[in-house]
Image 1 (tube, rainbow, N blue to C red):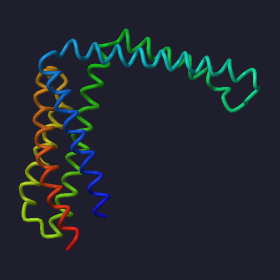
Image 2 (cartoon, rainbow, N blue to C red; image 1 turned 135 degrees about the horizontal axis):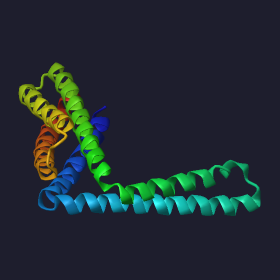
Image 3 (cartoon, rainbow, N blue to C red; image 1 turned 30 degrees about the vertical axis):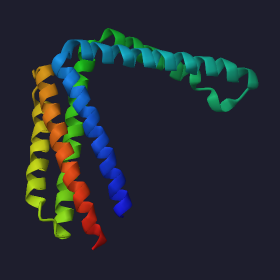
Length: 180
């Protein structure tokens, strides 16, 4: 169980660091960042679409019935990619919702782990509880503020990431309690 929590905590630390980098980019180049993300997503889907179509025609010669859907998937992927290239504003709002839901999810998990570790005698559970509530509040704030500026979202993401990193460090210390 200790190894399981260690792996989860290492992934949390990694995701916090990634969020810190993304948030700094959002703070210092908000418009350019979302356009780049939209263009990358669009290009990725278009490439995946062409690969699917290529696989369809390649496997059609072999009469492999398993890959008969690749033509349809390829066309859909290409259409999604074109949409991502054209509708950068829509993707920006979806990005906000996805980030907000991620932060809320992380806050709920932190809250659950806080109460679980309280049972094991964690003397820092109150601090963990406060940090979890702040993380949840950041996610809810992003989710329910449609007009939030991208740079502001970056600042909130940065706060979340730093709090999550601090909480992950505390969590890694609490993993030692599982040996008792």
